[in-house]
Length: 140
Image (cartoon, rainbow, N blue to C red):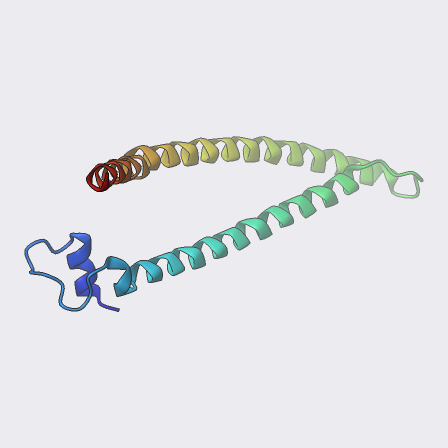
């Protein structure tokens, strides 16, 4: 792995001379290392998000079961009914707050993704298409 050659080949060190060892950015193995690290981070984020969603679904299932009416009313049914009413009220409040938070975060994520695409990915795609077009014209 040659960080200096990577910087020279990728244009980070414009005035530091030519690369000493590698002629291609991929040969420095830095891009491979970057991809590997990104995949590690994304897989951990996915696992955490997935576990959180599973826990949330399980919580909602348990709460729904708790709020469901008893098929056989026994001793203390009145107390349980009052408890259910309070729990249902709290659940509905949390549900509204959660829906609002999810909607807000979804919009923020969407805006960030669109901005990243327009500011980074789109220009790179355009640049790549132009380079490919020039290369086609040169080889034709």
